[in-house]
Length: 286
Image (cartoon, rainbow, N blue to C red; front, top):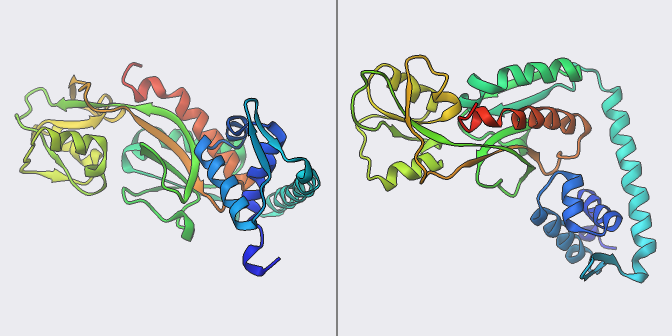
């Protein structure tokens, strides 16, 4: 085998999961990724190695008869790699194995603080919560876990859509008429799309929903905000929840190269479960 054809051991995990469960959907559930990710990883492995491993049947995916030995060797290899990873995680001093969680100021100032604090206590893991509206590069180790609001994840990230949230229109009791605008990353959200569809030509635009909420509370104008931010912001009242703004998914993800790290899996699961429980608040029905 040439050097360029050396197997990607992260892809091997996907191959083994499909072989073990006989189903792409079940493998995706076990690995906490989406169906398309599993298909992409299997196809990438087969193309890179020049071997076909499965045949698709009405009951799912079946390992080809002459590939059982190869699958078994891959299963043993992934088991050994997993054991090594667990041993390294267990031996690594806690202060070195802290986890950096990044999200927007909207999430950090509302829900994530208490969630991260509880995760740190329960898992006995130091966690650094990084508030940044620009998406940090997880591939360059700027952060380990991202909590993102998005329709889908970019190809370099893998994770789970754990909850949903919606947007509402807010103003102060004596607020000025006219919608405030969005700039920067928030302008690329579904709220930004909605403002453009309304033909809003705002005199004031900001790159932070938290800043936007403060301006609306001061009576500067009317703001489109995530309901879990607007509902709890002092001095604001909800006017409506526009039905033509799509509900947005909340993802908890890591870079594809590190997604199976034990310490990151544990932190993602803890944060994801807490956000799932918070969905009534995120949807403005709590």
